[in-house]
Image 1: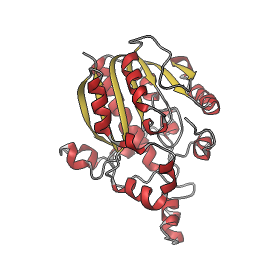
Image 2: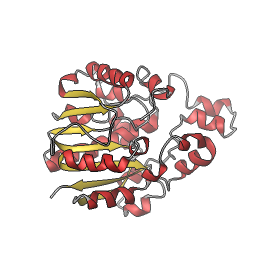
Image 3: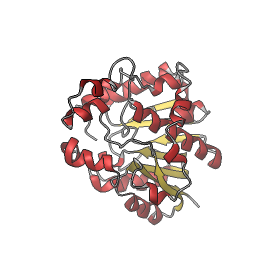
Image 4: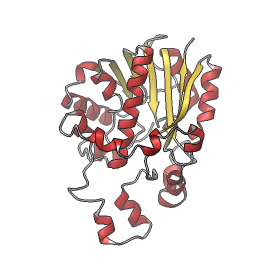
Length: 283
């Protein structure tokens, strides 16, 4: 993995203003992770690699730790891992986490069946030989493997790829945004597919970029329009929710979950969902 020169994650190691979309994404993801913890008795967790989601790195598994699970976080970039360790310390959760620097994701340094759950969010396309990583995730998992990737059918993804940030797609292996490929690999490793579908379905497209920057790149120069997505009145931080500074954030995100909660087949939601996921369970 080679993201050490990426200024975005460096910025968010100290600037916790992630944007509305990322906060929404985390709240929805947390709900699913806690469901898995209850359903499968998850007490030990490996997130490998930890880098994938935009915003603050390394806090995807915080909800599991706050619920009592023991978490191991793996990253290949020492500077980022050090920042993640400090952030978990700010949350008083460093006692519930182990932080491991490791750059060979084709071989995870754990015995078979070491963790109840092994998972990664939007990370596969950063990893060379991600197929071998998936095999290793299955090997070290005792119960479940959970993987999610950006939904390449979603309009924001298409906009990002062809208009907003085409250069990004030269830095990743986009074939791993194909969740059916991941599903096939999990089945080949003997896992039963217990769940698959879409997640993170708010009423806005997923361009990854801040809204003000999207408007700028699209040539919309209206100061009043851009002003709606900038300044002190547009501060969104999951860290504020985790620390208890803004407990109302969860209720605020619930207001945007109309599509998320709509009882439609997930295949229909694919046209708008930001992520697709698959859950494999060991026999």
